[in-house]
Structure formats: C-alpha cells, structure tokens
Amino acid sequence: MINKRHIMAIALVLVIITAGVLQYTYGKADFSAKGDDSEERLGEAVYVDNINGGETDNLQGEAVFPGDKTAADGLTNNYFAQARLERESIRSRQKEELEQLSSAGESGSDSVTAVQEEILKLVKRSEMEATIESLIKQRGFSDVVVILGTTGSVDLIVKADSLSPAQTAQLSDIVMRHAGVGMEAIHIRNMK
Image (tube, rainbow, N blue to C red; front, side):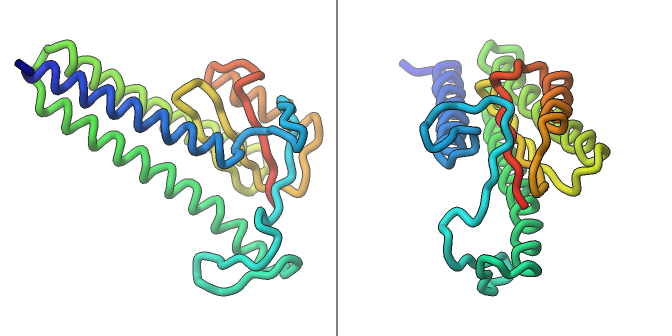
C-alpha cells in the first residue's frame, strides 16, 4: 500500500528528473563552450551570432536582418531580458511544485525535509546568479545572464563584442568565488 511518504518521494524524484531534463535541454541548446570539433574550450569566449543565419523575429514581431545595427541591438537586449525571464519562470514553477509537495506531506517527515532542502538550494542558486550578474555589470559589462545548473555547471553569456583573456579570467574569478565551482565548470560566451 502506498502511503504519503511514498507519494512524496515519488513526487520529489519527478521534480529532480524535471530539473535534469531542463539542464540537459540547456546543454543541448549549446549553452556550453564547445567548438565545431566538439572539443571543450574551457574559459574561452565564444562568439554567438544569429544562430539560424537568416531573418529572425524580435519580441515585438518585427523582422530583423543580419547587419541591421539598431534591430540587432534590440534583439540582443531582448535576448538577455528573455533569458532572465525564462530562467525565473522555470525556477518559479520548480519552487511552486516543491512548495506544493512540502505542504502535502507530514511536517518533520524525511520527504518534507528533502523538499525543503531542494527549495533552499533553488533560492541559493537564484541569489548566486543575481550576485554574479551584479558584480559583472559593475566591471563595465552592459548586460549578462548567468545560469547555474543543478549539476554544478555555470553558463555565463556576456554582452560584449569580444572578450580578452584578462576579461575572461576576471569573469571566471567572479564565478569561482561566488558559485564555489572550478574552472572546468564555467562556460563563458559573448554576444554582441
């Protein structure tokens, strides 16, 4: 017979699987610093430009063509805003699901404690992302998106034409200090 603890444990496993699928999806969307030869280039900035190479729609529904400076600037600004919105939307849904699981269980049970620990980890990741983004903007970068994965990887997308080795080292240092990860877990990309 299945009791509440079993249901809570199953629900927690489903939430963790969902987080893993989201992490896999981000990795599949090439949010890491892998080159054409599929060899990782750790700490190296990678130029990202109009992924499909053709016409793209910006968030206002206007056509954007490669080389259109004002439209491209709007698309880039929209990219950073959209990425933060999507990240917060995903986190909000995860937190809501975890809170529902927590409220459905018996107070003090192992499954409720595990769910509360997951909520705490989620909140800490969000705080770390905000702190890292703020510190990077203080270093003179106009915009940045930081995504801390559940597996310990950190994806950093900076609005810049290019990144010098010194800037890449500075960004990596900020991430290592505040996220507590090693250099191999940091993937930095620039976007115009």
